[in-house]
Structures are given as C-alpha cells and as structure tokens.
Image (tube, rainbow, N blue to C red):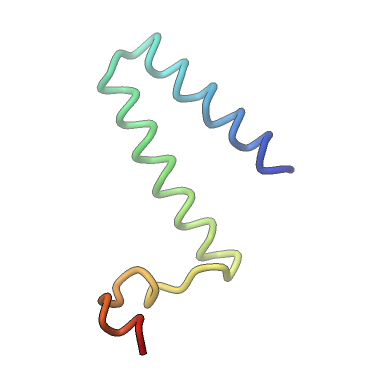
Length: 61
C-alpha cells in the first residue's frame, strides 16, 4: 500500500472522528494514529527506541 493511500485513510479517519465525535475524538484518533505509526516503524525495523530517547548531544557523536 502506498504512502498516499495510507495518508488518505488516516485523513478520512480523522475527518470522520472530528465530524461525528467532536474535537476530543479528533485528538484521540490523531494521538492513537501517531502511536500506531511509531509502533509500525519499530516493527518494520526502521526505528530504534534509542533514536527516540537519545539526547541531542549523543546524536552528534
């Protein structure tokens, strides 16, 4: 599935949540989508937890 299709589905989900559930549901869907994105990247091997928790000074080395 291309990234454009994934973006379309995510946008539609946020739109439906905002329309039917209000702003709180919109924020909940957006937050859970972000968590799902990070978990998906981790499971694919594109992201390491060290990349998230590493300080800025450690990245320069």
